[in-house]
Amino acid sequence: RVPLHRAREKPGTTRLPVATLPKGWLLFEMAKPGGRPTFTANRKASLRSRDVLATFQQCRTPEEFFRLSFEKLSDIPPPTLAAVKEDVAKYFAETEVRTASLTEMPLSPFQRWCLRLQPQSQKRLSAVAREEKDSLVEFVPAWLQLVKQNLKQLVRVATGKRQHHVGRLHKTLQMIGDAMTSQDVDVATMAGKIIVALGRGVVRVSTEFQPFLWTWFSHSYGGLHVMESIYFTRVDCSLQQIPLIDFIITFSQGHKQDLFKDALPAKLASPFTFLSFVHQLLHISSSDQLPQLFGTESLVSKHVLDFALHYSGPTSAICDRIEAVTLLAKLWLCLPDQLELSPMATEAVLDAFKMACRDPRSPEVQIVSHAALFCLFDAAVHRQISSEFQFMIWDMLVFSMFGNRPYEHVYSFIVASFCKCLQHHFDVNLASVIEQMTRQVKTSGLVTVDIDLFLVLAQHMALDARQAVPLLQLLGQVVSSDVIYGREASIPFIVLLCRYKQEASVLIFLRDFSRSLIESLRATDDSSVLINRLAHSDYYKRVLSIEILAKILHLQEEEFQPLVVEVKKLLATTANLCLDVHSLDYFIPVESDGQPSEVQDS
Image (cartoon, rainbow, N blue to C red; front, side):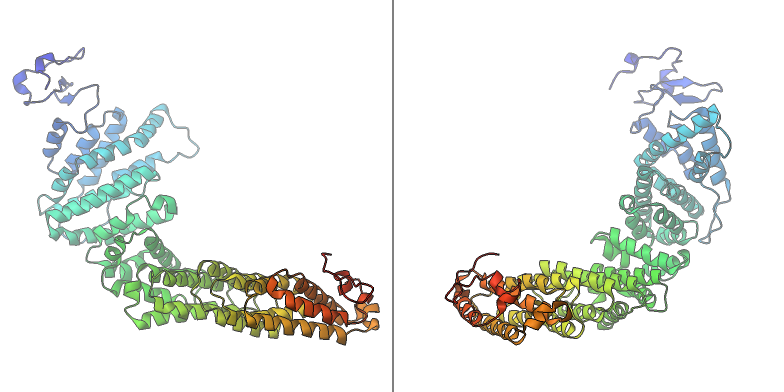
């Protein structure tokens, strides 16, 4: 410690007698007009010095604590300091509330500061007003930091004198809680940490204070108002910085059911707002916070689940249905243990998804519902939810995909999602997809996105030879008869042939398929068809057959060579193929002896 006689005195400072100074103080005191001393030390008080702590320990009420905290900030201009102290005095001047019933709170000092910071319409701020506005913006973080460092003393004064503690506690919480609604993310984050620590400290003093915390939190001007203001003014990135979840957990302890069943739906007027707010809470909650937020029992999640199920039906507005369906999936992903305890709950959720996926009146709801089902399927594969629902959800998606085939935009989205899903998951039932695909192609033909699905199926690791043959048969019909998509479908067709070139069943199919193509060429070998080509659709099918035969003859794998030789011999006996420029003579030159020469690229 620096001896007192070695400490430097500032010019104009009046030294008080040593006997009047408390032992251990290193600060001099300047005698102010009126005889009231104040601190000096370059006009800035050390926030962690023993004298500051000792001074806060002398406070007996929250009003004294807050007034002293403002006085410790030396950067506040005197006019601003006077106004702030006046706000604090007005705020705590009302009669203390002695019971749990609350009356309407006056404007807290922070709310008054926000009003002062608002730009005055059609007026230019004076120099004094501008100085006050700038100082208010700058001193709030420093003030919160000072309150945080002396939080134990704030807990003490807020819980002292039992006959007055209710009103003091509520006003203290309100003063800090309003700072959480600040537009400054750092201010809101710091205020959130302070009020959470304050609530926990109050409960540590006595558990009797927990009902008083809930009373303030559930009131229209209290914690619910703070949460509503934060939700409507924050984007996702800044909302995650504010300890909103810890705030809810601390102040609603023992009242989670009342919060989600009554308080929140009453405060958030519209169903969409409530659904989106709960969804946001689930989104920003960690795995450790979720059991504390919704409780270990399933009663709280059941209330939220019933609310979402009610508004997922066709009688609700589209925006409500979209948010309800999204929340159902999020609830299942975040609280699988609670949801899967009741088979009726999971069955009700799946039925809600079925209804939403099959509603042609709302394409938006259909797309969102399918996206949610794909998320649930991915979670079942990774064992985030019970794996027993994996194949159930998969069958729902398969049948829903082909059920929505008449609706172009919905079907395109589902097929694109299937392609992405198949590229990441291999333990899936491809037989059901191929079976439904075969049925749909035979009845309604192909669309553009089907080619992408064919190619993904042809390359999928779970596809075996038994499933490849039906897929080859389907693609064979397309490449030989579909004028629009025949050439595009030949890509997955050749991919399958090369992948399963060693399978006897595939080689047998290819031999029979080639023979049927040659027979179709012989059956349509009529010069009138070729001369009047625009009048006969058989001409275009003939071209497709010749092209796919040419691609088969270009297969270089050793397993296909016996078949290639056989096809060449059959083609050599087919007359009049040279009548068309697209015939096989364009791809397979014929020698003078009538035998086909080596295959050359066109």
